Length: 193
Image (cartoon, rainbow, N blue to C red; front, side, top):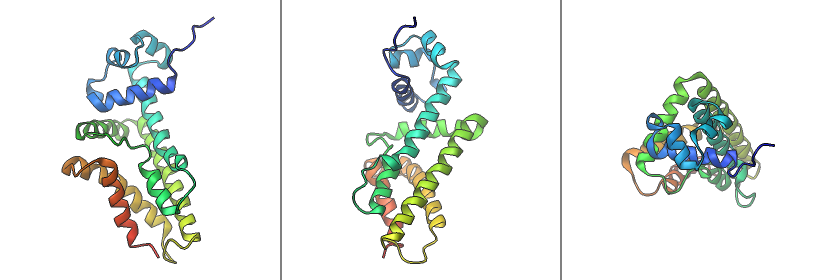
């Protein structure tokens, strides 16, 4: 009979992601992951396969968390307020500029490696659909001006999300989450009724 898992796969992946954000994917090793999670490198290999597979699993977990943020926000308040809350839900409020730089390093892998890219692209497509869904709700409750191109606005929101992260890492203008929220509020102001 197999031994029970003392730490769930989800908890392992969350810890691996924290580690990668702290030290960067270049310095990521199974030994470091073992120290972070309290599991031996051989146990990590048994559960996830290679170092690459562990990193890919952590990246996929992060994508699901990113997309799932739109549904994790309580269904109260205006649709646009919930949209903003959903966009920032998975963002760690205590993110440092170094952690953001390491996240961008992981994104480089996500753009260069086909398997990582497929996961990232799939997540982005699903997130965009959720943004459009929330914008349709805002349109139906007259929060948005009539005739707003919801697909174009969803794309602008996605671009703002990614751009605001980089902008914050460069300028470091206060905590990350409020900086993102300000960018979204500024963008949406032009479309509100």
